[in-house]
Image (cartoon, rainbow, N blue to C red; front, side):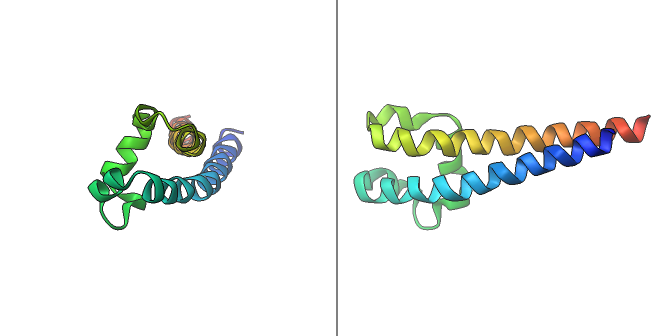
Length: 100
């Protein structure tokens, strides 16, 4: 049963990844078009750069006072948090099943 629940959490992580792949590129395009200073600070290929992902995870997109940016970045942030949380829960359940 524990491994089944762990597998369910892997499925939740995959769903979070799908949402992240949808919203994060849209957020990056919005940043590129409307906030060029921020886009230049990140440079090319900001999709998986630590600086841009840290900006997203820390919620610093709220500092821009751009409602459209907040509307795109919030689901991307939640999706990333879901990925991390679901994978962590899956790993814990797997460890619990190994220890039992």
